[in-house]
Length: 121
Image (cartoon, rainbow, N blue to C red; front, side, top):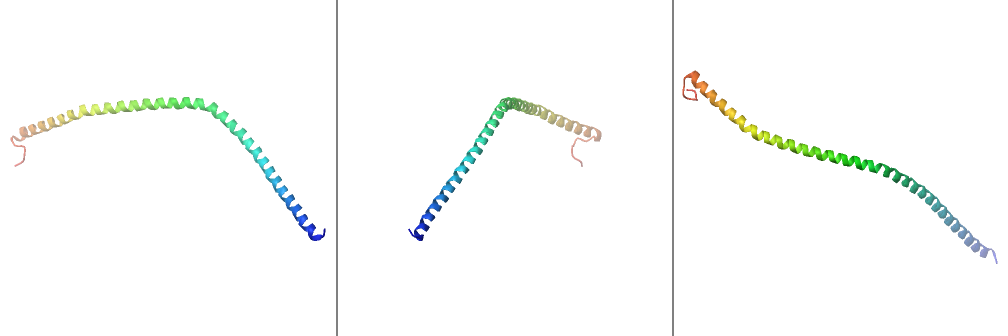
């Protein structure tokens, strides 16, 4: 074997060692990622356990808020209907009082001025 033959062999061996090192680096990176993801899973499991303990009281509180909201809606609807009924009962009375006052005023004007007409001459 001469020097040119050893050069190709050395190049092949060095390329193989480089590929082996790259593969080893990818393997170690995968191991580190697996370890990190394992810790993340444990953390998320802990968060899930904490949320489960909070979930039941939160659902109860939301149910209570829903009940209060429905009660307020019912009360608002009742008040609205009461206001409508009151308005429909009072408005005609106010109109009648206004018409009565207008008639009384016209009668007093005729009585005071002694005229039968409502317009000025």
